[in-house]
Image (cartoon, rainbow, N blue to C red; front, side, top):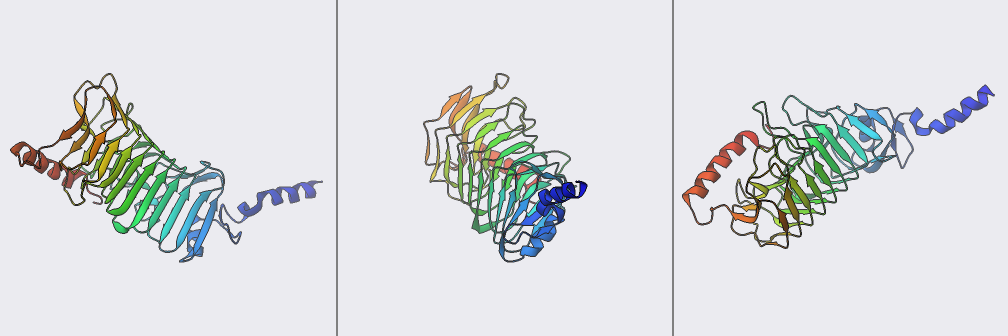
Length: 334
């Protein structure tokens, strides 16, 4: 009977006997995530990740890889960092991340992330990023796109120690960044979403800043963007480093045209303790296409033109000071 029981236990264990990281097409399992990524190489494949808590990390140099939790939100990457950057460092052709949890990501430079996307397309769905310096950090790849869907970002960001700020999501000059049906909450500094992409879409998401600490904008488009920000719920908390706006457009420059940017159907409010005047959209270009059909509760002006287009001294001085701060605190990499 003991032998029968042992055989039954082994049969239930399946791929876990060879390791928790299994290539779906072959059934081959590996003890480390890095070994599974290496086995796929420049091909395409899916890595199934068993429930568990891992200190693993991996660098994807090529190929198209799907990282999928066998059971959503039961595979947790806890503090493992590759190249001093992130749990997943991605510079292949494409990566998909589904149902994973990333937490406790920290590095000496202050920008430890769950995902560092340096090249290629990225799709993140049903995942959770929490209690780290950053959730997702991205470099520049104007030929590629990023989609974040049904994911949560909680307890992220920092802006201290004289280091460049970290944000919940900070993405460089990609062709397009799309954030849909996601939640941002309890920021610990920096912005919730910062993007230098030419096109942006932030839709059907929530930004709950009620427990935020020393936070800035909900959405920062420092070099402008076209696209849509629509049907989001945004609540501004009382502990702010910068309380001047919910959404900022071209505060650092006008690399990307904003004449096709539409902000509509959003619900913005302030907690009772946040009694100061602010704006839903602060626009440094004077060219945002449409800000309409938004609901604002509190001392919220829907659109504030920042005085750049008319060449006013106030606008030019404000912009100069913002650029100096940005060069010190809001760089993509140190």
